[in-house]
Length: 554
Image (cartoon, helix red, strand yellow):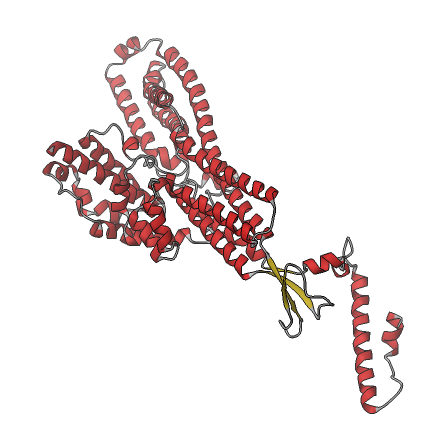
């Protein structure tokens, strides 16, 4: 029992520090946020045993690598510490223990400090993205060669240095006993060439399959965003409206009617169509549910946003005004797991649409309802497919054989170089170049298999930016009913067919026509002023500006 408790505590500590490291590298808060976690994290239900305490490295106890290094160094430190933790706890692999789809909710609850949650919420309520969804680039070769961050160079240089050091050792051994090594490695280049051909083909195909998964996840995220925008656009277009009759000069006097009727007679001024107060409130609630649904959806399969689904995260969303107390209670008390709560919010959206349509606040018949439900079905299919793609991204045997092929080819190259009597410099340099390209392609493929940066592999410098996807969806939730808040025409004008004011030339007015219209307006203004002056002085005739009259032909 004592050994089991130690292993459980070590695993929890490993996952906790990994989650915090991932969130720090995603940009959620500075070192003060992580420091707040280490100082304010709730204690475990059971005190750690001596074995578990010994499993914690002294570097973590002193906080030095976490707070004194850069974000990338902190991420590498977390990766190394996770490997130590998992070895002590006898876990099969760090990726298995830290998988966002299988990590216990209690682990995320421990990592979810208030500062961290506030940073998550601040980013999740934005309506404008602070950075693009992925790193942008200039296609020119000069710009490309100057880049370091986000390239395979920054990812593979440790492997390059390690393999080049191994190549130096092989060269040194060859200098000690060249004859024996040459006889032993006779024909080694033939074997290496055959393995290189198999590795090149397999690695290229593996990279293509990995990129296909990355592209599929990106397309699913964009389709999900598009269908959510469709819901907002459809609801705004069919929401009930009022007609406010106002005059341009007084800016709002007049009568108000509903349903496209002004009560008879010609309107005294402009006819401005607006949402009814009830319909506008429904659209605002619908938009908020769309934002909550989108946030919870991404939180269900990304580790960076997972803390918002914890009990502490749900309470903080209530305090920050994202949820009401009743909504949180309904979600928490439901039989759904935490990662499935977005399904309940999607059902709320459906019921709001149904009830609002029956109450007359949303106009449309059975065909409109069918179209709305089809959009909802597509939304369910899109976010369900993202989880399916992540859980079945690649068979272990496939990734394993590619890893073995790449490593064996790179390890065998120095021996092939000495067997062909290459110069030591060329053998070491070739080892570095092959490592950079082959290991770089394999590292790139692994990153494609983790589009949302849920794992600790690599530096994670260019994943899909979840904050950008959420911010764009937030903007789309209010874009459509804000754009349709006022209409320049109304149903009354359409019914009477009085659209002459809105019929304009196909190619607009020419410059000469614009100048002529301006002269006509000026002549009309002068005529009105002269007539008013004539009425005041009692004159019967008015002298007009002969030049203006001659030009406009009055």
